[in-house]
Length: 309
Image (cartoon, rainbow, N blue to C red; front, side, top):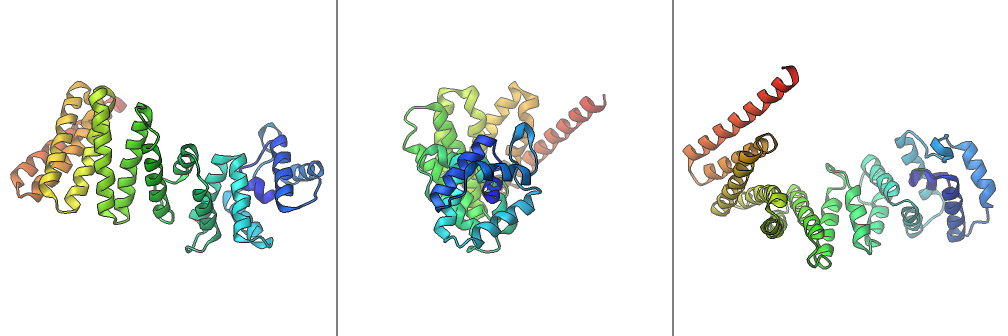
């Protein structure tokens, strides 16, 4: 039970007793819940509010979870079931624990933590469960990058079937498509990245048509990504068109709110410069680069003045 409580990030006394009773029933143990809860309370570090804490530091706790779940004659399915039950009781802490274990200890595809994660993914039956899984992945990850891309894409697909005219769901889906495109590109899956980026642009364009003030910044960002992915596939003229549209939007936004949007405009100008260079317009590329540098220089100077007077 110490491993289970560590996996789910600790528990209050009632939660600990519920976990003990659930694991006893699932694994066929006959240990009385209250005495075991008392023993755990005495053995584990104290936490605020009388909670039973997880084993710390994290690396020791993670190693303990691996050792217990793999050394207790549990099959791979039974291990996954233990993790799934923990997620049912404490979704976010359990997912965070599994992600850390995989990041810190997975040395190959057969590592138990990756099997647990795959089993959790397969059991995501609702958009909420997929969203929790998606949010648990680190933004920067090498070990988990394939799974992160798959989870992001799967959630975008799931939302496509349930969004109807809900603006918030559409915006979430567009964000997921944009994130999926970046993750797919990092994996070298350029055609898939482009497809996701194109769909993100389409959704953001629809939203920006309805509420320009809220969604034009997102449309510009998605156009930037789209331009980069088109350029990577040699579709230079299309990339140039997307980059020019992004600059047009961000130039207008920067005119209205310079402090908020000039750095973004500088980024788009840099992308446009690359696209112009790719089609042979060296002079145009140089102009865009110079404007980008000038904007960033002024932004940094303004920040220095605000800080030092």
